[in-house]
Image (tube, rainbow, N blue to C red; front, side, top):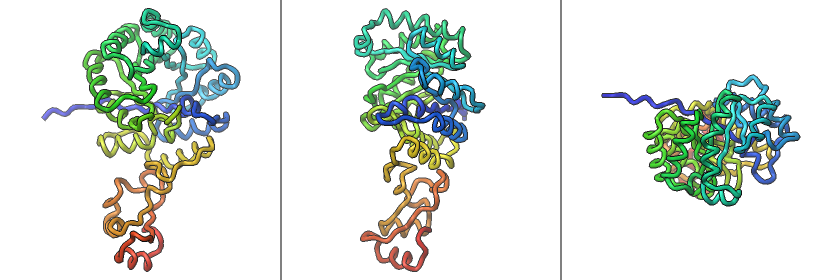
Length: 340
């Protein structure tokens, strides 16, 4: 039987860029440096440090982040403008992501057209490759583009020498079936171009769409800690890492035991407490009251939970008495210290 070797999977964390676009969130430089080190320890492959073109404090913060001696690569986000690339150089970046508005709707909003788009897609990656070690090109609002338009753009970007093409579901309207079909087709037509996925969670499908992209051949996927980001947020790091490991049965490359501490650290820095029922990292996700669950967990800790709390850096699950506990659970719990 032939064994198919999947390419390595890489997580790009955008907490310091897209995550900071969450209304009301602003990280201090100290927070950013601390979060960057924590992301690095957790096994993130690439950290988006910010947008140099914003200038001022942001430019100085990006300089500090790019100077860190991390295992993770550090990238910066640029518009499709030469001035943005110049400012990225000024802050010492060696890896850039150039974002292009791909849909007709976004192009019209920005006063551009497809002729402008194809000129930029054809010329900017080659210009950037002369200035930076690694050039990623992103198509914003790809989820509202015809498939043939995306295929044509992908070909232009590939021939222009980009190191990666990242497709963005900018307003969170894709579904896993569409994502699977598109990414499989792109991988088939452009096998030499690594693909990335950037998802938003407006319809609650960001993690599912990211999984679909990975399964269809995407090698890079964007995440944020706690799903921070515009509107309903981005793909949450903890959820995707566990879904890759437990649903796709693949290695995520993430040090899972770091996830809870990392989530709490970011929540404290941005002043937004974690919801109690937040998957993987919420305070309530390892608390059990239902009698049949408590009874099962006393015999097998994986009977009514998909993974052990210790695997993601949490303490033991808590088995609690309540109106749904049942007679057996009550008998055991009244004679057993709280927690298993």
